[in-house]
Amino acid sequence: MFTGIVETCQPVRRLEPRGAGARLVLPRPAADWAVAPGDSVSVSGCCLTVAAVDGEDLVFDLSRETLERTWLGDLVRGRPVNLERALRMGDRLGGHLVSGHVDGVGEITAVRDAGDGGRVFGFAVPAGLERYLIEKGSVTLDGISLTVVGPAAGRFDVAVIPVTLEVTSLGAAAVGDRVNVEVDLVGKWIEQLFPG
Picture 1: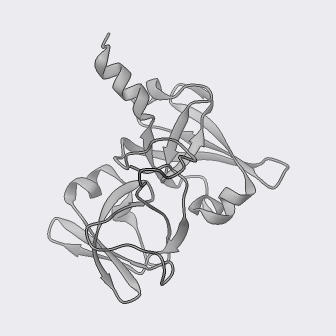
Picture 2 (picture 1 turned 180 degrees about the vertical axis):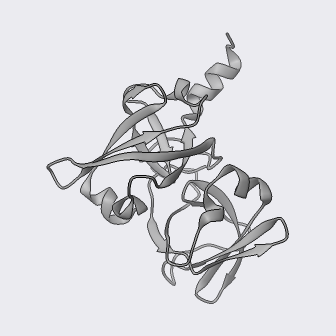
């Protein structure tokens, strides 16, 4: 589990095809950024397992399923990705409960200045996910816990404060960029438990 509070943003070193999947190599954020093989890390909203810590690099194996359900197969050298280590029992829950299991790939439809150093982003989500978007509800976009504003017909806005622009990939994001979307877990559980 994660919180959607991004710890760091790192540029991709390389993405190498491996059979039906791929191997992703990222620079380790810092020498004291403690992870080990087998640990879970949210990489732009996708829960990945650390395959190896190779000197200054973190190595992740991406399955065909991951490549089909996320935009991570489009990664190129230098593209920034958001990183968050898994939540530990007793940690503060600064965002909301995030599984790292991507529900679909959305798109940035608009970016405008908020007038306070922040920006307002417009997003569109794949058909079927709009039912989970509620005013002031939570949504995870590329691993970032954000608040839904004005949801209608599969589109919504989010207001992004300056510090979030500074520490996440949204600072360099533009209209047309694809984003990994994870809707709120609570809504999915309620729907499953009380269908119809």
